[in-house]
Length: 362
Image (cartoon, rainbow, N blue to C red; front, side):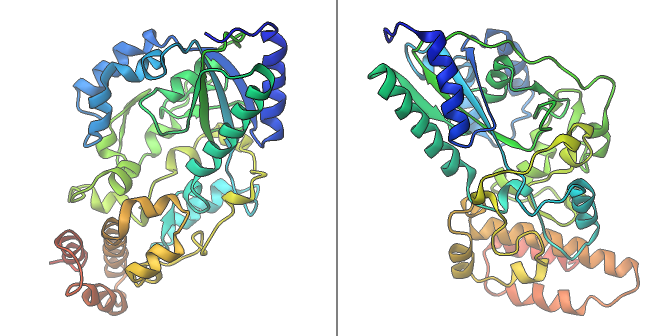
């Protein structure tokens, strides 16, 4: 454990330095997550993690940060707002309307700009380096959605918010539209009070979920979650869930759009989260027509690029199929969408071909 005398003063400084680096809030907690182990074990046993085998591989290590970073006793937890500058006060209504425009591609807000992993990780490293100039060499590692650790649990313990019924972290002053990250360290810093729940009897996130992935308050079956289906799932999207996905081609924000606490969501000061390539107003056809080279070039530095071109086309094919069926119910021509889909049949992998054929009604 690092030997440093004035830890209370250091904690105050760390919070100030974090604000200077663009973090919306910085708080500190211990790393004892033993109270969360039973819930994690039950969730894994039920298979609710789906194909995310890394969850199972690391098992209870996710609830034991001291095993991940030997000697660690504290987690410096940060959050950073991500609503892009172009967001309006009616952003929730704007996004709900976007989902109703069946031929428009809906991409989760957080993924329309630069990859948050890179932004947060570099800022966390800067914060750690700033601490080191004060304390001398100390033990630490920085993470943001990149290690087998229960980040939401740590953030809740640190007082950054509380776990909502949709399992996301909620903050009374910022809703849920923010990223979290942490520095796990051996500095024995004073800790902050944990968050307290404020969902009450509200169940808006549960009732609005298109695929009913939230089985009960605080209980999510990832296998039904659109974010899992369009990002984590590597193979075929279950046929029975495809119509429920609508035009959501990367992630899903519905549980956030209907959450009352998000009326307090904050617009980000970080220009890196600004929308790129018109991803807030792109059509399914436009994106489906991208070549693999265009996909790689346009989405350089984007989190979307991590799913690869094949899954990108798979997701768009499902969206086009749902748009096509909507046109049929309205007795409107599907010829434009049919042509776009048919063009891909001879040039794609079996996975994409399967979803294109489904979209065409075969």
